[in-house]
Amino acid sequence: MSNLDLRPAPAECGGRADVTARPVRELLPAKRVPLGESTVVRRLLPSLGRRMVGAWCFVDHYGPDDIAHEPGMQVPPHPHMGLQTVSWLHDGEVLHRDSLGSLQTLCPGQLGLMTAGSAIAHSEESPREHARVLHGAQLWVALPDAHRRTAPAWEHHAELPRVTGGGLRATVLMGELDGAASPATTFSPLVGADLTLPAGASARLPVRPDFEYAALTMSGEAEVDGVRLAPGSMLYLGCGRSELPLRADVDSSFMLLGGEPFEEHIVMWWNFVGRSHEDIAQARADWMTGSRFGEVHGYEGARLLAPELPPVALKPRGRAR
Ligand code: MN
Image (tube, rainbow, N blue to C red; front, top):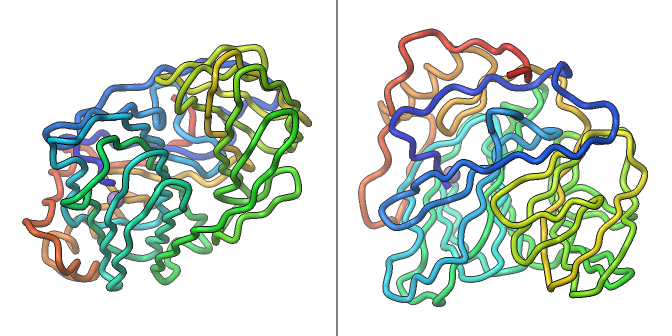
């Protein structure tokens, strides 16, 4: 997915200034952002109150939307740099094409992981024949400086490890949770998991005290560390926990994101993560002149044009507000 803001604000993130070393329960409301003509997404990161959770730097939750008589998701070719995109569906399907020549239909329960590294371009669309309901999340992970120019890659993981107990069923997308490790490539210590809690379930999930965590409900109303969490907000949990109490009165599912606090300062603008204004300006220029990012073949329609850069230079300033 692309950030389709016509005037995207630069987000300066990273550093430990805004990390909460102890457990907290900080409820962060989503921003509703139109994506294309018929879709509105709930943007949970970056938000005014918080820019990153570990290396997770962008979280959109969309749907469930009835797209039976709609084109559904139609995101034309656009570039990425310095990050990984994590695509995850609860309902529907998304057809992914990229400048490496990948062509993959992503289905619910499968991980689509694109490492942009130095440069990649992709498109995402609902296939012409598609399911009635589209529901999912699109997340980005910032790459650390040592790996941000790595070669671009696409991974499709149809089989992911599971953790069960106390009625809880967790699917591990990225990293490791309670001893179950995802096969997905990661570049910093982090975890991303999708957890299902049937009505009446109660569990204590082992987590790492050195990680910060956040949770977002996909459906139902999960109770995370005593806080009832409906779709549309993210609960920031801070660091310093060795377990996380979970329960639900109704069938619920939520995503748990966590990681070692991301020390480096980064600049995020449009679909790029860099370290300086020059990084971002060069990537924008390269996309507009058609160099570096390659071609996405097969998408019917024009590629996205980059928005104008803001008039002031982008500066990395740490994760404080
Ligand atoms: Mn994208």
